[in-house]
Image (cartoon, rainbow, N blue to C red; front, side, top):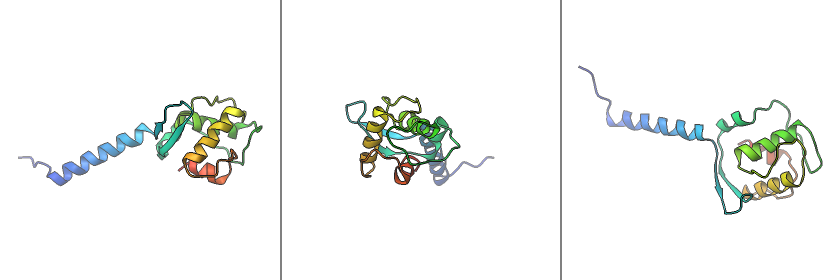
Length: 124
């Protein structure tokens, strides 16, 4: 005779399965019509598989060109849905516009400068 799981165990199993699916799905973003107007609602740590990076997170601004800019562009494009951002490792106009929009959407000063607060928001 096998015992049947009680209701509480079934609910826990279902909750764990749903949480696992949510973590695998990556961040949730909402588009407000325009392709570049992305409002960030939630991000999970599981999405960093899209943009592996082992370098530092230096302060960045328009005109910078390095691997950190490439990582920033990857996160903006693949994780947060800013499809206009090309991953060319050059902090140009499209990257600047995406950074400003992202900063505004998370309640930061939208100055287009990527410092510790913006990096922290990008990597919750």
